[in-house]
Structures are given as C-alpha cells and as structure tokens.
Amino acid sequence: MSPFIGELIGTMILIIFGGGVVAGVVLKGSKAEGAGWVVITIGWGLAVTMGVYAVGNFSGAHINPAVTLGLAASGDFPWSDVPYYITAQMIGAFIGACIVFFHYLAQWRKTEDQGAKLAVFSTDPAVRSYSANLVSEIIGTFILVLGLAFIGANEFTEGLNPLIVGLLIVAIGMSLGGTTGYAINPARDLGPRIAHFLLPIPGKGTSDWKYAWVPIVGPLIGGIYGGMFHKAVFLGEIGSMFWPMSVFIIILFIYAQMQNAREYNEANVINQKEHINAEKSV
Image (cartoon, rainbow, N blue to C red):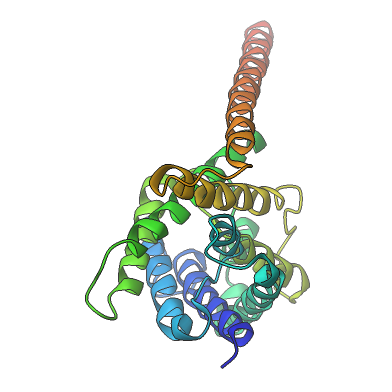
C-alpha cells in the first residue's frame, strides 16, 4: 500500500468511527441517542486508534494535516510530501463522511434539528466568538502535536502506541473540547463539511461556511507551532521561525482577549437596553 492510499484509508476510518459516534448520539431514532459527550470523546479516541492501527505501517498514520505540518515543522517529515499527504487526508475524510451518511439513512428524516445534522459532519462552537474559537483550536492542536511527540519519545509494549494516541484524543476532548467541539484536524472538519453541502440530507440546512475557516486555520497554526515548540524547547534546536511564530501567537491571544472583552461589553449594553425597554413597557 502506498502512503497516499494509507492516509486516505486511515482518515476514512477516522471519520467513519468519529462521525458515526456523533450520529449515533445526536440523531433521532438511534439506539445511542442522548448518550452524551463522554461517549463522543471516547468514540473519537477509538476512531484515531483504529485509523493508526490500520495504516501506521504504511504512511505513519498522520490522518491529520495539522500533524503532517507539525512533523514537517519539527524536521521529522519532508515538506515536499506535505501536499501529497493532505490531499489524501481530505479525500479520505470526504469518503468517510459519505459512508456515515449512508449508514444512518433511516435517521435523517426523523431528525428535525439542523444543527444536530451538521454536527455529524463538522464542528461548531458552544459560544460563537471567532477569535476565541480560533484560540481554542490552536491550543487543542498544539497539545495534540506536543502530546504525539511525548508519546513518540517513550517506549511502549509493541502495538500499544495507537491506543495511547487514542487516549490522548480522549483527554483533549474531555478537557479542551467543550468550546469548539475540538476539530484539531482541518481534514476532519472540511472534508465532511463539503460532504454535508453536497449530500441529499433531508432538511439539512446551511453548512455554516462562515465558521468553516476556524477549524482549518486554528489547527494549522497550532500544529505548526507544536512542532516548532517541541523542537526548540525539548530538543534545543531553535529554528529561524520559532521566535517570530511565538510573537505571532502571543499577539493573536492578546487580540482574542481584547475582542472577547469588546463582545462582552456590547452584549451587556444590549441587555441593559432590553431591560430598560421591558421596564418601560410594563
């Protein structure tokens, strides 16, 4: 099997299990309906585990453009192969989402909630604030890439590494996933979002393209910086882009805080006006 096919199949498996567990929990008429966030995070962790088990020997099982870029930024993967891998990951994610659609054919018409249908395919924020959402995706992916580097630096019983990687995904989901649904993978979000847009899902509603850039840009930044950070701090090899990237991250976080404060103040002003108008109408 070529690395291209490996990444395609691995990412497809990731989405079949990951998108599948979300569908089982949120779609009406599913026996797993209402199982909750813990089931979703465990399902995604096992999805990654199975994807890595399936193709790790063929492609290294990146199954995530942010991981591919993080490894390239740390010098552990050739930049020339990055487009090749990302293309395979995108195709695999799209195919995986289509398979989930066909698996749950009987549940789509029973589900009226358009947001629930979209959640099967892509992420959305618990509180919509683009700058804050971007920061969440950066942090989550940074921890992912850093965690993968930590796992790679330790020796485990043969065949156990994919399970440890899966547990890392569960930990990220439980600890950091509540803000944006932790895409931490551009292919995982964009490929299925395109599938949602194209597939004949009954009453599906919008694919929320206004938000779609966040789970692409955030993971790419977090993945690249995670690779740079590990190389600089843990290996003592500071590249020419490490400090400029660090400054950029700091500025971005400060901007997000300022934007969040502005949005909070605007919301307070609106609430106060509504309260005054309500009192006048009494």
